Image (cartoon, rainbow, N blue to C red):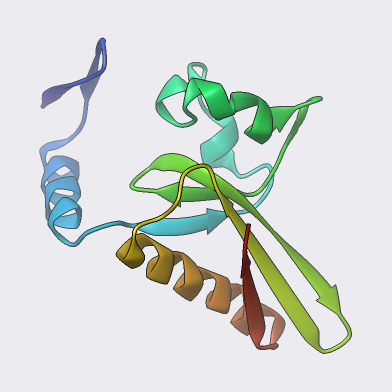
Length: 125
């Protein structure tokens, strides 16, 4: 099925469209993507993924930084710092998150802690 996104016509399989519509009713879908994630690197036109005014925050000097993805669009950046048995996950949204989006970002940050086997302290910038 074809659908419009800005001035582009995009195509998706019908099953994918139904899944996207279902996810839209569930509220914000938040993911913390690592630096150099293929989703962040895999676009010739990155305008659909990273709003233009934040492009230099995500892509600079041939590098990419870890991205906070909200409903498929970069909505911030994040990083972690591990010191001994402590883990701090810093989330820096481009614009303030609403309550639900913030809670889901925090849940993702807690998953980073689970990955390291440490409780995560979440810091918002």
